[in-house]
Length: 284
Image (cartoon, rainbow, N blue to C red; front, side, top):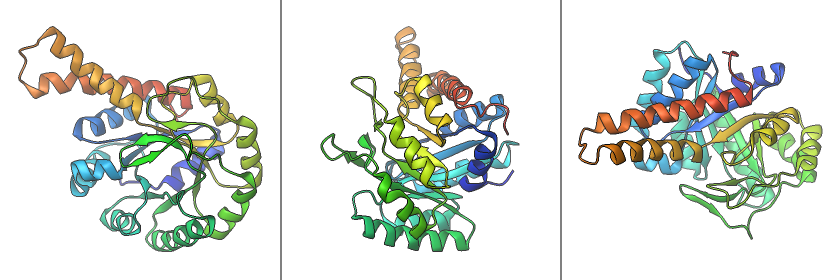
């Protein structure tokens, strides 16, 4: 079926009180694993590509692979740009066939973030593409985006209502204590802050850096209004684990299919597990 927008998927998640998983891709095997998991779980899904993924795989390849997978699938699939910081690249993704984009203006001042986000919303909405924005700074490293612990800044609820009102975004990523990459210790999420933010705006909330967050905390965040949960690191870990296991057992193996096939299966399983945690299984 054709790609759907993030707005469409998250509106249903709001109505039925679950979260849609947004899984980062970098190559064909990851895209295949995400779609296979969605079909097995009968779950809507967001496949997202970061600026680093686009640089690595190429924009045309990512768009082509996801569109091909979506055409052959009965599952509603959204192709989303994750952490777009370059205005021109965000617009290029819209033009090339992404059905949803994120503009990350978290390193800008509040007013600058609003101004650029508003322009992107106007462009995207004219062609039926949804927009996610970010308020606050999410720590850690993900591809081209690095935010130190010192720079990380939790979202100020006082800014949320104003920001959403000015930009009219479709969803909002907030900083409540999560971080990109692998956690050194169990994260401490600020649920009171999340509840306050949710009480102030009527847009779906997005939680980034969720790979190392305990399932119970993810589910609590969903109960407080999170409707999109981003997963990247767990997929990378499964990929590498699958490759290592094959090479450990068969160090002389040179067939990429025999190396990457088990890695694809490992990624499919972790994505399926996450979908069950998010409550999206059976919701397609």
